[in-house]
Amino acid sequence: MMAKICGITNLGDALAAIDCGASALGFNFYPKSPRYVSEETAAGIVATLPPSVCKVGVFVNETPDRVSDSVSRAGLDVAQIHGDVSYPRGIRVWHAVSARPGFRLDSLDALPADAFLLDTPSDILFGGTGETFDWSIAAGSPKRIIIAGGLDASNVRLAIERARPWGVDACSRIECAPGRKDHSKMAAFLKAALAENL
Image (tube, rainbow, N blue to C red; front, side, top):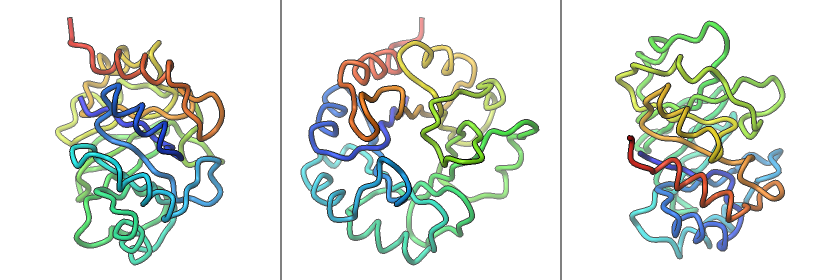
């Protein structure tokens, strides 16, 4: 199970997430987000992290050139794109998709992303809502599916059982403040997410 902690803003949270088993960390480059970090801040954190951890840049409505530049400058492995954006060339892409009513898995068939992050729909926020959606709509996809939206230790096992995803992603419900992780909640989430299926 790929377990991602998103909205990393500082080295302490990054290292704590890795110590607890996170396989990916997300850095938010959307200026309107309370979890926004600059390329310089992200690069400073990334430079200290082990190569085995996937470093993911989160972008909203950005041009492919801007995404490529930021990925290069910050030393990232993947671009997670939200909103109306074209894929940058030569970069792994995780495409964020809103799991709105009527969503169909086959709508992803023509998209060449490495993985798809299904998140709770919102007319205001691009992720970080803390709300869940019907995880069962993600079940059975041959694509790499990442479940996001309102996950924590209390519900991640149920999400995994219903969706059988490639990965899970947590952010707002494992924080003590926007952009600051509650290390005990984060550890509990990762322990539950990575537990062996019974």
